[in-house]
Image (tube, rainbow, N blue to C red; front, side, top):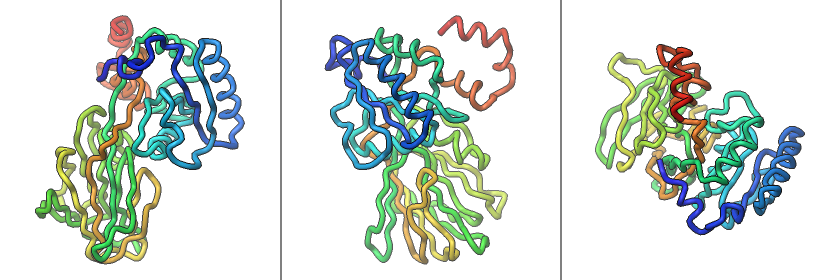
Length: 303
């Protein structure tokens, strides 16, 4: 975890922070909540503006804090929207799960006071670049936060995906596809596919095969310092490369998909009320003895 001083280093007085509120446009609850938050922030002396919708690029360079309204999908869109000029983000959940958007509407005033008092952490998250090559030429380049997925698609027969690590063949996956996830994405598609939960501030990639046609293919975790290349020799008609749930391109025979660590990092604000393991318990119903009332009470007292 990072100290709050990075966010405040250029602003001795927290009230001087420049805040941008973003979220999907055209939704009544988002517009109403953005107005409420703008008022709360203005009352605390912040310089506030609202930017609903995700058009254009790079408009947030001059802001110090971005408040994202919506769900985890809105945070993913914001991370890609900011591109290589990332600004610390506070997610306010207006959706269902809210794993990344951990702050509820009811908690907003208290969280704002926590930020003003400097009682928070900045947690950096690995971002990645996904680049698709066809006949030796780059045809698509995407910045992502959660995962790159290669999906077999129609006619729903298995495909082969060759994995090369730093230019050397590692293995060949045969099945319905492959997920290459970041730690923050380990609780998304990767988790649904049976992959492991990896602490979100680690620098690693998680490789989880989709319905592999062998007992020997299991999830592998490797360093984000390496470069990974996926070779799709014989895709199906509907095979595609997907980044953070969005189709990047259909895949043709011989296409190569390169995945590597991005220079920029996504930074999420975490207050003392929203620790990593508490989020796992509350959002993913992580059970076992950690879910006992006594342990939860002790944990809350220690935070």
